[in-house]
Length: 97
Image (cartoon, rainbow, N blue to C red):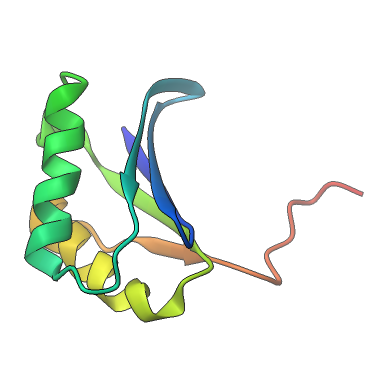
């Protein structure tokens, strides 16, 4: 399962995709004061709430409009899931004309 994360100014949206199927969606509040450990706990809580085992996550993709949180979220993902997330942003082309 691929964990997708959208870091917004008010909320962080989490989604889990298995192949092309969206398996869950969860939302947590964005807080610049939270630490890597606190975000790691929030991510685990969201997965548990939706019955997803953390070992099911094989990759992560992150989009962010809050650059100060990028390093914090990256470390939380590495800590919990043992994967290095791919960060996407401006300049990524979809191949659609």
